[in-house]
Structure formats: structure tokens, C-alpha cells
Image: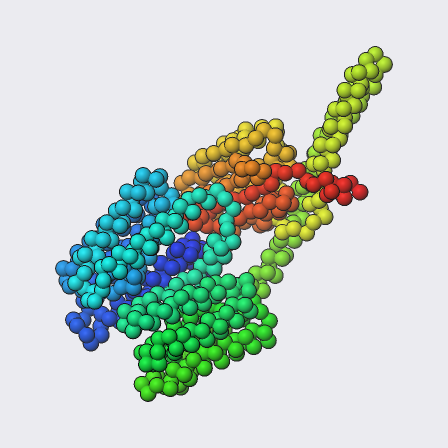
Length: 587
């Protein structure tokens, strides 16, 4: 039961993706700030807690935005206005980072609502939904004006306009890429959503500190952004990320001491972390976890020691001021944080080792099963073409004496059939000689000359119990092995819907061609699925990946980033094999 709960929690969190991770980080930061300020010695106790209804309400709307963007946007605007009216009524002080009187969570939630509205809604609906959010924000800023002393509405208008333009641009880009191959940056952020959440939390704390620090401290924020960007890439290049962390922290210290001034660089600047900005603290934690997880122990120890030396030097400089925290206190806090990061990295390293060992065994078995299925297809392909060749040769022999021209035509047909057989056979035989990612599957789809009709027949006959719609635009001259692989992919995906898509009410199958590439997508709106759907005979997703990669294509599968459910997408090139490769195979 515990394993099932952990799996469901991991799946639920992974469905949030990077936007959800940032939203959760903002929520935690606001909860920390509100709970601390609500019971301090300044002002009436608990009055800041009146901020929580709006924070929680907008978070709920933002989490619902991928599935229902229009309703979520209108509801979010109403929640923001109602919360602002309540705050104004009870005269609760509102804390802010960017927008005038709007909390961090409310700002992030509004941007998430706007992004999904632009990305998913028709243009006119997106304009109205976005307009409602903008008007609701402006009205809320006016209502909360009294609760944020010293703030400037003009600055808020400028900052809000920049955020609006950037979010709309991101939504337009996401709208244009709904059927394209995921970009490298998008894939990296999606894979590293826990790190994105940790980094976002540190950056939000740093933004909040601007309201209590001297204004020049804002010049340090770009350095923290650079450190966060490097930390995100630590999962792929941990050594470079560690070097970048040390470089950024050194540059931050120099700028803080020279540009801001010695007096400002005193203990008033991030005293709890020894002068290290909060965003760079989060970046350091992420880099340490990646080093312990991915690099050899000796190299990880050397790099972590170097990073610790840079942090220690900054802390020593910070404690030179009279009212700075004692160096012993900073040392204990840093040691605890470092120990937690190392322990978590060791846990991930052990989990990766166990998973790799288990997956290697399962993949080997799945590869064998899938290649046996491909061998059966090879037999079918060769038998089909050879039978045609034999029939045409027999006919040519019978008519040769009476009609030599008919015999010549038959020889042309024999030559064409032989060429087709060799082309199909080369693509299938290559699968027996390549070491690709493996997969299982006992179903061998037989394609006809009408791939669209084949897919519709397969979809109509699927026994998964979920209404399925098909959006198909396929040419009739698809290569036979490509058509069979598409049928296999759709069949396996629909089978997984019935087994794993808990609560699914709709499934959509899309297939079409763009330029020289075939695109297939199978998506459901259920809540099931773990690290990847599997079937009873092996890893179904691995089997599909085997077929797609043998055809020089690519496959992605995981929680849909625009709503609930699971989505499988594949891209298969339609271009013929190069002549040089054909000659090499023929030899």
C-alpha cells in the first residue's frame, strides 16, 4: 500500500510539470511568509491570515487551468477580486514581490492561467479570458493600494506589462508546437520539475527580500538567475554546473562589495545564509544532489569541496561585520543543508542503480519478444513478394511462346516485386542486427493498402471501454513496415488505456504527415499511469519505442502537459533509405 501511495504521489506531482512545480514553490514561500508575519510582534495577531483564501483559491484555479482554461481564468479573476475586497475590508497588509500588493502565489497563478488560456483557447476566447485576468489584477491593485506602503503603481504597471507580453508570447509558442517534436529545453525542464520547484522557491524568497533590503540588492538577482539556469542543467553536465556555481557566487560577492558598497554588503544582506543569495543557496543544493547522484565519488567529493570553500569564503567575509551571525552558527546550518543534499543524492544514486538493473533484465526479454514478432513479419513480407514473383514467372513461361511482349511485361513486374521485397526485407533484417532500446509485444499488425481504414477498424474494434475519436490524414502509399508499426503503436496504446487510464472519459488518436515525417498521437484524460504503462508480457512502451527507433523515428510518452491523462507521441521518417546504405546491406 505504501508503494502504491508513493507511486500515485509521484505521478500526481509529475503531472504538474514545471509550471506546477513553480506554483507549489510560490505557495510554500507565501505560506512561510504569511504564517511568520501573522504571529510576529508587529500589528494585530493573525490579520495576515486573511491573505490565505485568495492564495489557496487562485492556486486551485491554476491547477485546473490545463484541463479547463476558460473556466479557470474567469474563476481566477473573480477569486482575485473577491480576495482583494476582503483584504481591503479587514485592512490586512499584503506582501508583494513584483506586482503592487499581489502576493507571489497570486502572481504565478495568474501567469499560469494566462499561459494556458492563450495556449489552448480559440483566439477570441483567449482575448476575453486574458482581459478578465488583466482587469481583475488592476482592480485588485487599486483595492490593495493602502496595504502596501511605499509601492509605486507606475512601476507595477511597467512590470505587469513585461510579464503580460512574455506570458502571451510563451503561450503563442506553446500553441504552435502542440504537434511538433518537444524541444530540448522543454524536455529538460519537464524531466527536472523537482529541481525547478526548489530553484523557484529560492528565487521567490530572494524577490521577497527586495522589499526589506536596500533597493540596490536587486542587482544581485540576475546572478541568481544565471546560477539557477546552470543548476537545471546539472543533471546532464554536473561538473560544468559546479564550476558555474562557484563562478557565479564569486562574481556576486565582488559585485555586492564593489557596486552596492561595503555598508550595504553588511549583515542586512541575506544574514541567515552568510551573505549568499537565497536563489544561489537553492542552486548549490541542486548541484550537490546532481554531483552525488551522477559523478564518481572521488570527483564529486573534490567538486563539492571546492563549492564549499567558495561558500565558506563568502561567509567569512560576511562575518567581518559586528552584527553578523556567528561563523559557528553559519557553519552548523551549512553543514546540515549539505548533509541533507548529499543524503538525498545518495538515495537517488541507489534508486537509479536498482532501476537500471531491473530495467536491463526486462528490456532484454522484451527485445527478444519484439524481434521474434519482427521475424514473423519478415516471413510474411518475403512470402508475399516471392509468391507474386513465382506467379508472374509461371505466367511469363506460359505466354512466352505465343506473345513475347507479354513475357517482357511480366519480367518488369517481377523486377519491381523483387525490388520492393528487398527494400522491405532490409529494413526488417536491420532490426535483428542493431542494439536499440528494446520492447515487447506479441501483436503483429497486418497493414492493407489503406492505412486510414486500417486505423479506423482498429479503433472501432478496440475493447478498452472509453469513447475514442480519430483525426486521421494519412496517405495511401505509406511503406508497409511503417503502416504496421503505426497500427502496433495505436493498438498497444489503446490497450494501455483500458488497463491503466483510471477515470478516463475520452481518448483521441491523431495521425498525419508533415513534409517527410509521419506523426502519431494517442492521448487520454484519465488519472492512471505510473512511470510508464506496461502490459502483462513485458514493457509495452519499450516495445513501441523499439519499433519506432528501428525505423529511425522517435517516441515520447508521459503525462500530458496541457491537462490530465497520458499521451504517447511518435515521429517516423518516411524518406527511403540512402543508396549507399542499401548497397552496403546488399553486400
